[in-house]
Image (spheres, helix red, strand yellow):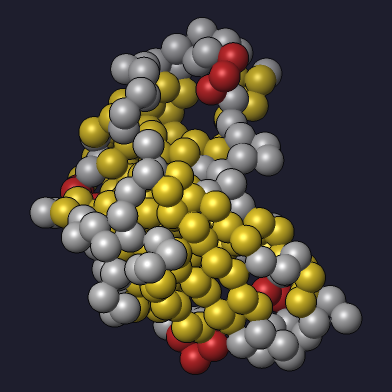
Length: 122
Length: 108
């Protein structure tokens, strides 16, 4: 059973970079049928797609965040990561990592991590 | 951006009743790229339906998805106590991937 677990600081100062890692178990991050994604949730914006990364390192970002986002994959550790720079209080929320099953005509998030709350505050 | 508008915002029903949730897109969505999720307090969203009408593994058959074009529906035929939650639709037909604002199904 595929499982994902987020890790990283729960508190980040304004203007700094938020860094989170997602550890995948039960499946290889090098699977050709999955992209690996980050989604955040806040009362203000609801569920917001941040982006997805493929095991090759190819990544797709939400245009609204593209200038501040970077995602990467570490195949040796079966992990993928998110960096969001120049954060403000508006970036506060619960961050989820999730597996995007992308095969044939279908694409959907079939497994999610439990989520991690990140607060941006000095 | 393809904006998904869900209605109603809140649905107040009793166990055993039928729930009908709507998801309307601002642009056409391919049926294979429309999904529904259920979220309970303190938990991550859980995949219910993918490709508009396919139930995910372990999802009971009281959950039915339908629709095409810009109008999609999630129907829960007879509400069980564990079905009271928030439901989100999601599309990936056009970038960026977007989610609806959610419909809360609460106990009347």
